[in-house]
Amino acid sequence: MKEINDLRKEINSLRSKVEQADRASKRQAAPFRRDEKELKKKKKKPGREPGHKGHYRKFTGTPDRDIDVKLTKCPGCGHSKFLDVKKTEQYVQDIVAKVVTTRLTTYSGKCSHCDQEIQTDHPLKISNGRGAAGTYIGPVARNLALNLDYKYGLSKRKITDILDNVFGLNISPGGLVHMGHKAAGILKEDFDSLVESVRSSEVIHADETSWYVGEPKHWLWTFTNKDHCLYHVINSRARQVIYDILGKNYEGVLVSDCLAIYDDVNEDQQKCYAHHLKALNAAEELVSKHPEDLQLIRAIKIMLKSAIQIKKVRNVVSKSRYKTAIKNLENQANELIPSLQILKNDIKKAPYRRYQESTIGVLKRLSRQKDHLFTFLHYEYVDATNNLAERRLRPAVISRKISCGNKTDKGAKTWCILTSLLQTWNQKEISFKEKLTQAYHNYLTRPIPT
Image 1 (cartoon, rainbow, N blue to C red):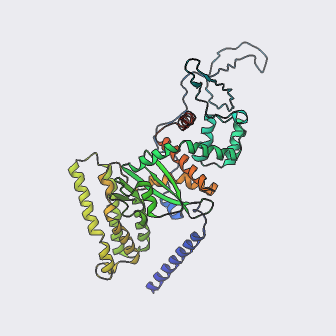
Image 2 (tube, rainbow, N blue to C red):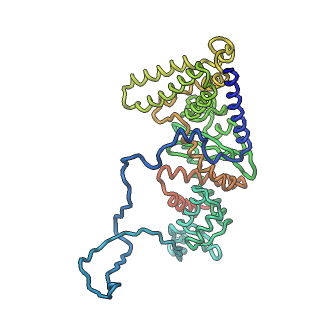
Image 3 (cartoon, rainbow, N blue to C red):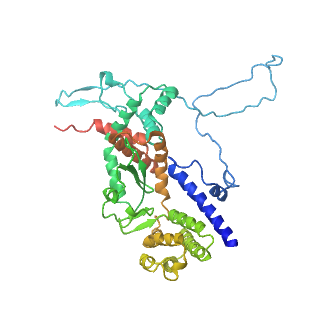
């Protein structure tokens, strides 16, 4: 009777999971919130940790203007003399939203001595337009508009509303599109330089997500590290895309999830521990009533978490002790995770026949990536997870919900160039406004081919 009741409970549990999977397959976007079980596990008090350093707004420097509100007369009796007068100073920081129009006059002429044609120049000059084309948006406004578009992911119409309602600057959505294409064109050399920097990097985190270019079936790829971030949109999720970006002989460490297209792209790889632990947690839940399976899965989880802790003391313990710890982990992995050949050929033999299908599945997953389990321990600059690439994709995913990606190939190319450079220069604390202004200036003063 007890066995029947246990089976009924298991059937009900499986039905619930099937219903959840069915709902998820029909959902057009990610769920609004995490699963209730996850919420209960990760529930913590909001705010920062107790005892943290306080923060407050502090003003240093000279104020732009002074307003002195003196005591004039008593509102009760009208008397104008006061006792025990105390002065209180406050600093109010605000934004003055105002369009500043500069009439920029330059001159050109011929040298009376050598007949050379010369003209004056100025950093604000970013166009050779004259007449109707002689009025254009300046570098500060361009920087703001392009940041709102390609960094913060606002729609074109929202950006025009902000520029108009807040600053009084009139520009059309079509004008913003043209501005983006123009900026991408003059920054193409910087983008090409970024691609070369990514190819020569010591470590690259790679990930991809679905994208739209007028229609679905396109993919947005990111190749990133702490100094660079490259975005690439293409209608392919094949291994060739990785070769096109990194080359066929990438010598650095490639960090990724366990998608098969990344396997054997290069020699040194690190597979994401977050994905491994997620798969182990899912398997652990499915085999909760099978002690032998639980023991094995939990031992593997402890091994992976131990590896993360060992990395933290890399610069604390001696080199010999650190190497010994890595060797012990590798030996432990060989004991816990059999080879793929054994799992395929001896699956029905002892001791593997006693394990559940979900346990065998996670063993196969880890066995395929056994050579890439502890790579991060050998390099100080390599992480155990692919969290960096996922964080770099997150703003793009939010932008996709607003814009559905791009409408044209040209728009996708512009998006990749500007978003890649904005993110990269932001990571390096380089001013996008200054780089953009300089690029416009270089474009205007470039030698004209004859």
